[in-house]
Image (cartoon, rainbow, N blue to C red; front, side):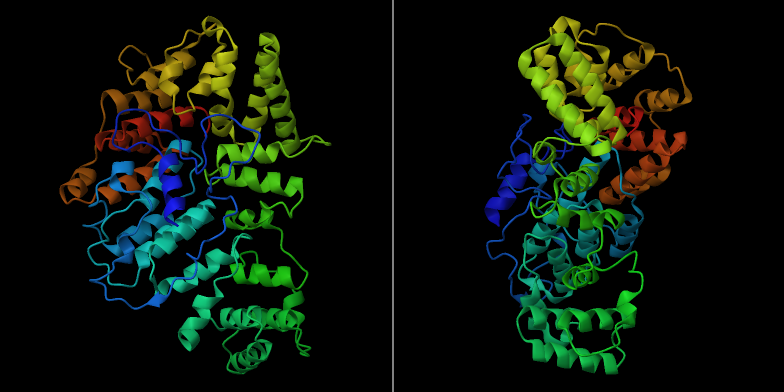
Length: 507
């Protein structure tokens, strides 16, 4: 696992509190577009555990191991202090994470991942129940980042008993691992979910015990009718009570229900379920269209690397039109024109691909993959404004703000000013621009923020700013201005600029 985490560290952004632009969170980033799928593990790429998913379960005293403090990214990588969570209460942080929306803004996604994966002292009231660690893992799952979630749980080894159900669910969300049944069965009757124990007995080949436990649990009323019926079908018992299993499936199935439906030959479509289930469609066992849909869905939240997505786009030749096929076709055309050196064709193909990716809410992914090679292929003194504007969605936004554009307009000038961090000479043209300008020229920090900072509760401040930014992005310009002001006040200048640029691009 150490080598795997080292790979993640090398590919994650520069310290958050540095003023230099950060690279976007990509679990896999070679910094150059590629048609091949790299070998480095990422948040969605199948990964074969080297034994890390078989940790012994421990009841180690809290003063020996504090699992709530584990992380993948040390302070020297994130720039976040180890005291990030120390002075906060577990329930407060859990509530903040639970109400945190899944952001479509690349800068906010990056900041969220860095917070969730940071190594930092546990909350002051952490009591060995590992509730904060479980809350962080759950938010990663909400984003579809199953591989980092697994790595975070593994880092807590020796695995505390309260985390075994979390590990079991994670192992069921990916096709790359066997279910974590050793840990479930090791706990025996102390594992509260009888259905999981029954499933694991069967997976281990102990069908007689599985049936016995099923009949006992069913008689005692410890299983819902649906789960009991699914398990009977899974175990191929003689029970005729399978009506519940034939009812319309739960719209929010557990990972175990998802696998049981799959095992009895009635698989549920991940595309209509929460994002985490899409990870199961990334393997080559699924059709290309299913892989593309799953990959795009995960890329929207930053849970899939740019190069991994590009590799899936390049698996074949589109034979149809619409949505994912249009994007795959547009990429093929743009790559061909980039190789040809035909500047007019490059500009046309870039515009076509840009529009296709905007329709798919993947503008930032497209920007990170294709702006740099497009600029290099064109005369630097004749870069179309559409290319430079797209460049504002990349970690190198400041560089593109300094390049000469073929033409310009007030919107471009305003975005370029944000990218440079100097809006002193810009006159806002709308209420939105006024709110953003105020955050950079006359920032307003709420007194509650100052109070939390005085108490050393930086993590709460950042989580509040993220929630406030999402609210502001929905139309509350006061919240937008205050969120950007807060991010800049705590040293997240780069995040504030990138978040504002992405917001203006409709992300």
